[in-house]
Amino acid sequence: MPPSRHVGAMSNVRVRNVRPKPGFVFDGHSVMPVPTQDGLANVLTGRGTSVDRSTHNFWHGMSMPAQQIEAAYRSSWLVRQIVDIPAQDETRAGRDWDADDELIAKIEAEEKRIDLWAKVRQARILGRLGGGALFINLGDDPSRPLPATIKPEQIENLVPLYRSQLTLGIADDDVLSPFFDEPVDFRLNTAARPLIHRTRLIFFKGLMVPSMHFTNWDDRFWGDSVVQVVNEAVQNATSATSGFASLIDEAKVDVFKFAKLAETLVQPGGDAKIRKRIDLATQEKSIHRSISLDADDAWETRTLNFAGAKDMITTLMGLVAGAADIPATRLLGKSPDGMNATGEGDERNYFQAVASRQESELRPALDQLDAVVMPSAGVPDDLSWKFSPLQHLSEKDEADIENKEMDSVSKIVGAGLIPESALSKAVQGRMIESGRWPGLKEAIEEAEAAGEELPDDDGADLGIVPTNGGKEADPISPTTRAPSASPEPARAAE
Image (cartoon, rainbow, N blue to C red; front, side, top):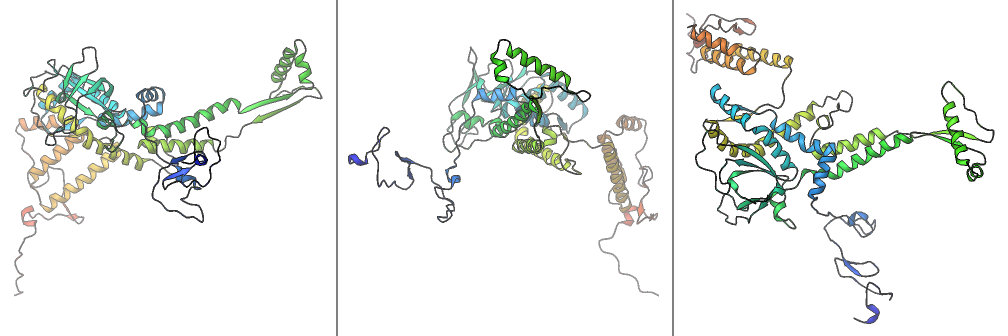
């Protein structure tokens, strides 16, 4: 390269006619590569060209350090709410089992003994912080797979672990293995560094990380922390609220202008004289009193205008709620904004999202845990269950639903679609499950033990009067009332 075209960090030579290659830019000192991307460009307006500042935007991927995640969780109430609320909502209602009372009592006793739901909730929180696991401690060698047979009360305890407490082994590279691309084993980061078999760990991972580029093995397995995603929105909201809070001390400032102030301050004891004058003037002024000043002195009050502060903070908090995927009514504990707003739609959507995460993320972990907990409780491990409802209706809404259900039962009785003995059992079960009829189940069992018969097929024992278009139903039996599949042709009039 000729000397006149040499470009160096300390060069003072003026460079001429430097033509950078495509994908490079000359900044006056050197030719630097710049990211290129497809997009709309307009040379006339400058859109999409180098004069358009938006073309210089790019995403910078960097994992949030674990120390910052911990500091944010411990210091910011917003971050703690964002991490804890979904985990609490996913685990607070428990499960409804399809089993008899004796089996359910055994399951609940075992769950209480090992403190199952509190440990699952804690592991779920650790997972949202960046990855966690639940260690099933059976009191034996943790490096061996779980035994095929679990004895009653064999579980000693459940231990929630954060990702930093476990060292990942090498990845399973057998594509036919059910544990493909997962660690073969784990090692606990304690003084003894025991080896833990993966069947004894139930994983609660963070946000999915695609295995594309620049992703290390730990992040690819455990996922990202939700704190990393909401960090920018939380910091903006926190900075705004802190900034406006600091301005409260300056909301009203008294300004005193004293004649010959500089000359007084340079004199011996001058600063004490000025301070005394300010104190006297401040003590004198009030709504009922006057203030006395020298003819050459002046006094004024300056106040700050906070107009727009509420809207700005509300907007920033709304962005935090959107980033966290939690409605503001749940995250901030505030009433919904807007005229005639109730927030019911936002909360309904939120609880639907929680129910979806329960099925897609929490159920697989609980199924894996139940394979050990159920035998430890002394019950079969194939019992079916569903998550308990997250929202509860008011008494008025429950009463309205019962009235509509009884209307439906009346129509079913009138149509004769179901034998009323079977329908009676269904109605009794529905009333028992609703919980609005305390002692009903025991009363029914006592009545059956005393030999009382179930309701007859006339509907009277159900307390229902069949209706037909608002008229009294005919005395024809339900069987003959049912429409015939092939009705007989009408006879000709004699």
